[in-house]
Amino acid sequence: MQSQPFDHEIFISYAHLDDASLIEGQKGWISQLHRALEVRVSQLAGRQVRVWRDPKLQGNDLFADRLLETLPRAAVLVSVLSPRYVASEWCVRELQEFWRASERTGGAAVAGKIRVFKIVKTPVPLERHPAEVRDVLGYEFFTVDPESGRPRELLAELGADVQTRYWSKLDDLAHDIAELLELLENGDGPGAAASSGETVYLAATGLDLAEAREDVKRNLERRGHQVLPDRVQPVAAPDLEAAVLRDLASCRLSVHMIGKSYGFVPDGAERSVVAIQHDLAIERGGGGGFERLLWIPPGLEVDDERQRAYLREVRTDPRLQAGADLLEVPLEDLKAAIHRKLEPEEEAAAPAPAGAGAEGPATVYLLVDRDDAAGAAPLEDLLYERGYEVVLPVFDGDETEIREDHEENLRTCDGVLIYYGTAHELWLRKTLRELRKCAGYGRERPLAAKAVCLAPPPTPDKERLRTHEALVIRLPEGELGDALGPFFDQLGADGGGPQP
Image 1 (tube, rainbow, N blue to C red):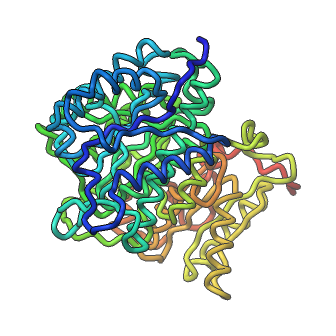
Image 2 (image 1 turned 180 degrees about the vertical axis):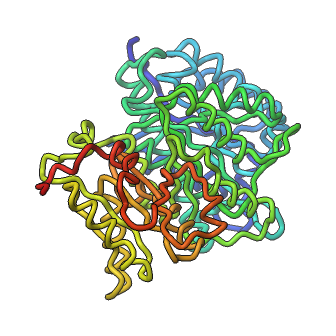
């Protein structure tokens, strides 16, 4: 397809009421958007980008004379939705006319991206959005007050926090417009590839993590990855489930961000959309070739009993074991973990097999409570005799350094052996949860072997212990014999080091 000669790269469609300033002498919301968008898109494009709107247009008498001439010569339309916009026959007609005109100037979509950018200035029920953009994900220039539930528009001149959100949204919009303009300028047609990276399912979140999700989405897209869902999700449970399964089928990774908000419950469902997406991702993982990352902000405090119950489920659900990592780390660490999944280093693409490594014997991290260190000594001796390098936790010293050493061991070891003797059951639960966080510490391949060794004294809890997190090995009194056979089978016949 040949690139089209556009007189205006960006046409802003808006209701004139939305440009009325609340403070006399101050620029209106649309006027500020116009200038900011013109400057930022021009900076990103490396040339002056032309933005057009008619601040004086009044009445239907000028529509045919002016707008019908201008719309076909615009590359993209920025449609600013508000209660007034959707009620205006005039505004909706602008959108419809551009949609029809775009079919004659390269198509309504380029590389899977439509040429209409939907800004939601003030919330409007989805069923009232014009049909052309009803399923299009918009750029929400508002937040919802957690106390009152009322929407608060983002304004460029308000406090520092609001300004940051406004300019972050504006920058996202400008980047996306600049990328689409480049596609049009280069003559890329509707069949052009939308992304050179991977496709990731970034699950919907509760309101408290909406900004964090946008941050992750922005980060992924800037690195060339496609993020799904890329359209508004249905509100009825059966339709939602069908849409989620369709999107998951084209992804090899899903990311689920779980916070303090329980989230929206679709019509006809008993669980939140957050839980439904995760359930369907588990189902998708049953077919293989699919991984899940679950993230919980560290130090999360939850008031909603439904969400507390769901968090307990997430932290203890045995279905997490296959193809999933649970991280309770800062947001930046989550983004790093996602990139390691999608963009593995060359040496990590073909990891050395378990057992003898290219640089020496395989390493076993023997996790033991301080009070059990002496009891675990025979286990340490056996591992060494089999040729493995054995690493134990550090108990004394600077707390930060101890933590860093622990994370480094989890990041680099080949297998983990948990010695569970006199330690409290809560210590074991915490230790098992640590194994799920390996990806967040920078681990680039799965652990070759994981086992819990149940040592004396016997207790009812130990007798009932079952977990999908690791092998469960019951150590005999006295000589260990072949008790660790299943662990060695997973890890490799021997460690590759010198043996007696």
